[in-house]
Structure formats: C-alpha cells, structure tokens
Length: 260
Length: 179
Image (cartoon, rainbow over all chains, first blue to last red; front, side, top):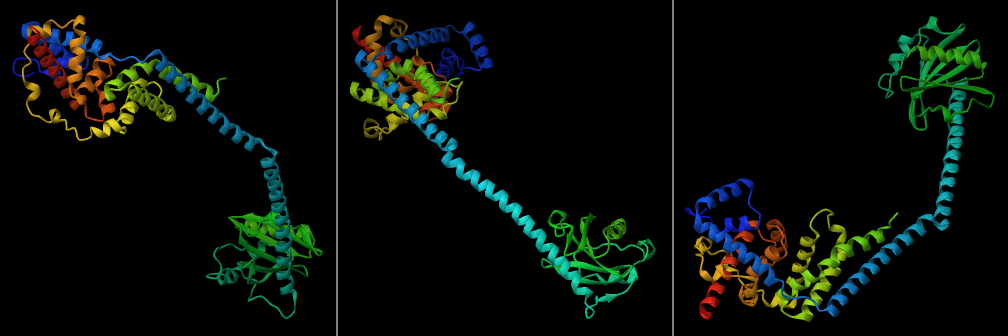
C-alpha cells in the first residue's frame, strides 16, 4: 500500500488475480473502508475489460487463416513423415538380415574362438605342467630345496611367491608318501610353488599357484600317460601330476587341500 | 496403439490451430503489417513444431508458443529496427506511486468507446502495450508474461501499472478534448 491507499501494483494484482491470499485479504479489508480505492479498483476492472476487447483488434482474413492452418498441418505432416521415415530406416536396419546375419556370424565365430582358445590353453597348460614334472624326473635335476620337513620347505618360499600356503604334516600324508623337496617354477610366466612328493617309487609334482592360473576347465585329466589332478582351496589352485595311479594321486591332493 | 507421428499430429494441431487467431492478433500489434504478421505467425508455428519435444505437457502451451512468437519477432527486421528503444519507464523512480486519480472519463469507459481505446493502445509504448495484450487479452499469468518477455515478474507488474496509468491519461486527454 502507498500511504493510506492501495498502490497501482496492488490494484493491478487484485484485478489480475495475482495477489497472494494474505495480500488479497488485506486489500479487500482496505477497500471496505476506502471509497477512493474502491472506485479505483472498479475503474481498473472497467479498463481491463475494455482493453481486452480493444486489444482483440486484428483477425486474420479467412484466406490468411486457411493458409496458416494449411501450412501448419503441412509442416506437421512433413515432420511426422520424417519421424516415420527415420524410424522406418532404423527399424529396417535393426531387423535387416544384412545387419543380423553378420552379427550372428560374429557371435558364433566369437563363441567358437572362445571355445577353441580354452581347449588350446588347456592343452598348452597341461603340456607346460607335464614338462615341469618331467624336468625334475631327470637324474641331473633336483629341487632347489631338498627336505621332507614342512618346517623347512614352507619358510623357503618366503619372498619367492606372491601368495602363501600350508603343507601337511608328514604323518598326515597317505601311506608310503613323502615330501622330497621344493622349487619355484614358472607357469605361463608366473611364479608357482613346485612341490616334489613320492608315492611308493613314483614321483609326484604338485604345483600351487593363484587360482586364476591353474583353472580346472583348462586342464586335461591326463596327458601322455600321466595323471593330472586339480583342486582349489583358499583362492589357490593345486595341480598334481604323476604316473602313479589316479586314486593315490587324488588322496595326496586331498591332504594338500585339507592342510589349507 | 497411436504412433509417435500420430501423437505429434494430434497433439500439436489440437494445441496450435486454435491459437492461430490469437497469435495473428498479437503479431499484428507487434509488426503493424498484415503480410508481415502472417509470416511471423507461420515462422512461429514452424519453430514451435520443431521445438515441440521441449514443450512440457501439462504446462501452458499458449505461454510457450507466445514466447516463441516473441523471440521470433525479436529477430525480425521490424524488431531490429526498433532495437534502440529504451524503456525508461522501467527504471523511472516514483512513477508508479503517482496517484492516478479517477477522472470522470475513466469511469465512463464502456464497450462503445472501443475505437478510443484502440487508438490509446496504438499510442502506448510497445513494451507497455505488450503487457496489456498478454495480461488483459491473453489472460496469461505474471510469471508466464515474465518468461515470454524475459524480464522479472516485478518488471511485469510495474509495466502493467504504468501501461494502465498511461491508458487512463490518453483516454482522459481524449475525452477532455472531446468534451
């Protein structure tokens, strides 16, 4: 309010329905007692109505209206057709055998290559493990550490491997089995614990590495007459290879796993 | 099930075609020329259609398309020619507090004085006439007018007060002269 009267903005807000409810109530209360402001509001309402009618001065001719409507509809149709065309092109691309054929071929080829790669890796890994085992069977080759004492062998690996593992007590090993020694081998370029055991007169190589290296699906169960046994424990992979019969090799593997 | 193009046709045409007359009227006030006004409306409709994705359903389509009309006008030759116009009224202190005393002339305003009011509207400064057109004729809210004109709501209020005061003064002069 301006002094004792409503401001032009308040009168405008009142006749335009733009006053907040509190402001409107205050203005209405003022109007009950102020004849001058009441007259100004009435005059403002009259002016608003008259201005509305006067402002509605220009109307397009029927021809101009028809032209504008026709052009608007024409543009809408063109835009709709463009959308439809774009979608049609997209759908034809999406469902076209030209697209799906090669994609399917790529998918099948990918699956085939993945399978082939797994088989190839299994063969390579099995061969590498067997080579490592055969190497220690040579008379001239002996493990780096020669000991049947787990308390000697296990500390020897400290600082040589990026993981740790346990060895079974000597009396926990299967009958007529013994730990002969240990070495560090490299399988696929990664350090691996190479444990040498004996079962009767057979030599057994047990490899311990991180589980992702010695993954079972990649390994064969036998190669060149040697048995290959795999197990996992404590995020480690264990592979034993020997020409001993498979049940005895599996028994040794169980004691290794139980020690973890 | 209606397709996207079907929805576009139905919704845009349903919303825009009924506003052609109002858009044309506003365009005529802006450009003062029938052909130019028709071109302005057509350009507005084309731009609105292109930008229809940005319209939020449930909001006031009229305010949305009037803003496009306004922006289209501002890039027109007519608007650029008037670019030097300075709206001193928006900044003049104390002008809105002047008491627009009721004169017998304003109290006599009726529908049959339409010609006098049309002339008064013609004499109003364009920026004052715009708010009268958008508020009194198109019945848009202050915030919608503010968005269309790209000014604060307070400026809309002060322009409206100034526009109405100017109309009264023009009419008072007219009736006084006649009387």
